[in-house]
Each structure stands twice: as structure tokens, then as C-alpha cells.
Picture 1 (cartoon, rainbow, N blue to C red):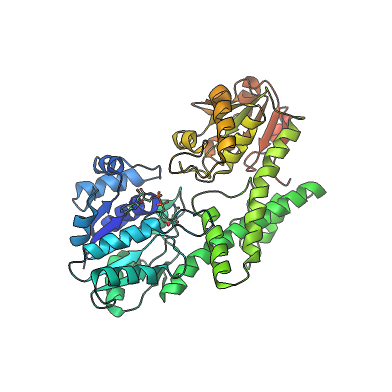
Picture 2 (cartoon, protein in one colour):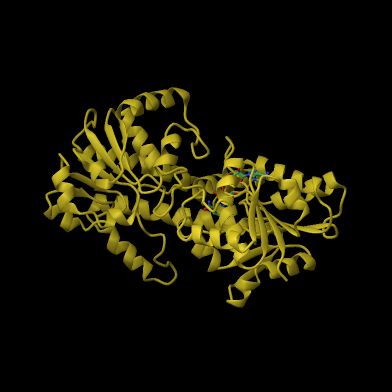
Length: 460
Ligand code: NAD
């Protein structure tokens, strides 16, 4: 039976889930504290860039199954199931900041007018679903399993492929405690059941840790291949063939073996820090993950250092084209994007930066100064230096050739298809220098060299 669902938080996860669950036939209200987001969504305009999202959004609004509201209380009262898709940003000590999760749990407690299932989609440290359970039980004076149930349903969607991932997930993980909650979740995901998506039913703690273990492992895999690429480069080996051959081994798999400027995004950096902090809290050695975090930061510095070396020394007074600002292709998300540190460093070193990204310029503009929801923390003195330099020397461009115009050097930071198919003839004509640093290995090195570029990739 289709359910009435409220989804608290309409960011990347909440919006895609709202649209997807409505498309399964459920009646969904997406709730956000931000009135501007809610207004745009009700008009059928996605507030994030994701392939296919607009079509699904409009289709489900038109079918009357999907609305958006700032009135969380009403949405909770009218729903059988409440999904938490609020943010869990990193706190200063590395732990996940659970302020939004706790706030959402309190508003559920205030509006519990009958049995409801509370489903956590946000990535939360082990123990958080029990905390949510305790907050609701205490504040509303009710009994878990009788008056409400808590389910842990971590989300694995990849930004850039979020809609596709929602409808074709590798698996659905559900941590639960009672059969009534399980039946509700079977109803919610019936469409995925029918296409034989694997379902993993487990306890709350296991579900919570599956999410962190998965992200920490992927971050480790990326960091491993980045270090191998650095070694290949130092020794004259070709990381492309190394990764390809490693990937032929079924135990390893070819995915996530692409070297680059270091991982970024809204998940890997914060989730690796959070699981390391959880290890400390429980007195368990998480040294592998801690080293991954350190090595990833160092990869960003290695990337800038290599660009400066390719330019033959200080970039001061010279123009660098930065192609790609998003943390990966097909998204406008710039949270912890390697481009942030690369551009900041170039500006501090005195370079003139001409940057282009197909989708992420607006988000990058605020994030560069450590502001806005995607900002990250910046030391105030460094922020002022970057702000002054950006005012003077940062140019956002409307296309890759505008960014390359007059540039002494170019760096590809994000693997957008535009850059994979870069017209090297035209690039060589508009640039004033010939340094081309392909930090994502998306170009053919021989073709770049034939066009007279001083080309460098990563690890080959
Ligand atoms: P986000 O920051 O883009 O969105 C969170 C939204 O929640 C914001 O719009 C905020 O205004 C809203 N919000 C906060 N408190 C609220 C409340 N009480 N009621 C209603 N709305 C509220 O976050 P996101 O990227 O969608 O991530 C959400 C969670 O999902 C995080 O825990 C994240 O780790 C996890 N996750 C994210 C991804 C991803 O690719 N972005 C993938 C898997 C899991």
C-alpha cells in the first residue's frame, strides 16, 4: 500500500528521495527550513543540478503526489513515515554535527499524533538512531516499537548520477528493530523489491556502520591509487596500465582506481573524519583511515606544487586557466572540492585565475571564501588575503576557451566531458603559454604533445 511520507531536508539526498519515492506512487511532502528552496521546488525548478531530476520533479508535482513545504509540523502529522535527510556537517573535532538531526527528532516528537516510522537517511555515526529513538520517546512520553519505530536507511547515491542511483541502487540497507517497521519499509520500496534489488536487513548499528565503512573504503581506494600514481611518476611507470591491470583482478575491481587531485565532495572528507573520531571515542585503532585523510590533503598540495613546477616557478603575475570547479563531473557541488584549495593557493601565490565550470560557478564563488553552505572553515587572515586577491585577479568565465584565452598554463581539475573532448587546436591558438596539466588524466598525452603542449597527467 502506498504511504504518506514526509522528508525533512530537501538537499541532494532529500530532494532526490522525495522525487523518487513520489514516483513509486507514495504521497510525499518534502520539507525544508529554507523558504527560497521550497518556493523554487513547488514551481518545478530543481535547486541542485542532477541529470533527469527536473523531469521527475515536474511529473510528480503534476500528478499531485509531490509537494514541498516549510511547515514541518503539518507534514509530520499528516505522514505515516518521516525520512530524515538533513545535513550532518563535520564539527570542529571531526565528529558529525548532529544539530540538524536532533532538531528534526524533536519536531517529530512534538507532532507524533499516531504510530509513525522515523527513517534516517542522513549519514549518522553509530548510535545516532538510538539517540533519535531516545529523544522521541522521552520528549513525547511514548514507547519505541509501539508508538513509533526507528529505521536506519543510509543513502548511497552518487552525486551526478543520483536519480539513476535512486531507481537502480546496488542495495538497500535497512537497520530495524520490529516487524511493523519492516512491513512499512517493504511497502515504501515495493518497486525496488519487484526489480530484485538486494535488501540488507540488519540492526541499527550495522546499518549505520555499513555506510561509513563503504565511504571510508572508497576514499582509501582513491588515496591508494593516488599514491601509486605519484610513485609511478617518480619511477617512469604508467599508472593507467597499472590501474587497468589491477582492475582485471576480480578481487580488486576497476572502479575507483582513477588518480587525481585528491577526493572531495560532501561525503568522503566528512565521513572519513567522523569514523576516525568514532574510533577514538571507542578506543579502536582507525589508523588506516587517519592516514588516508592526511594523504588526501597532501595530494591537493602535491597537485598545486606540480603545476607551479611545470610553469617553471612562481605563478605570480601569470594567468592560469582552471577548468572544472565541482568536486566531480555532472554536479554543481563544490563542497571540499580540490579546486578550492588549488585556486586559493594560486591566488595567494599571485596568479591571475581564469576559471570555468559548466554548473558550479555560483557555488564556488561563495565557497572560495569559506562562506555559504558549501564553504568549509577558513583561517580569517588567509580568508582576507584570498578575498583581496580574488577581487583583483579571479575571473569566472562562460566557457573553456574564454578561460584559456591568454593563459600561460591550464589545469583540468574536474573530469567534465567538455574537457575530455577539448579542441586542442583551438586551445593552443587562444593560450599564450603551453603548459597543460591534466590532473584527471582525461586527455590523450600524445595528442597534447603533438599540439605543442608541455603536457603532464597524473602518474604517467
Ligand atoms: P544538504 O546540506 O544539501 O541538505 C540538507 C537540507 O536539510 C538543507 O537544505 C537544510 O536547510 C535542511 N534542513 C535542516 N534541518 C531541517 C529540518 N529540521 N527540517 C527540514 N529541513 C531541514 O545535505 P545532503 O547533501 O542532501 O546530505 C544530507 C545527508 O545525506 C547528510 O547526512 C549526508 O552525509 C548524507 N548523504 C549525502 C550524499 C550526497 O551525495 N550529498 C550521499 C549519501 C548520503
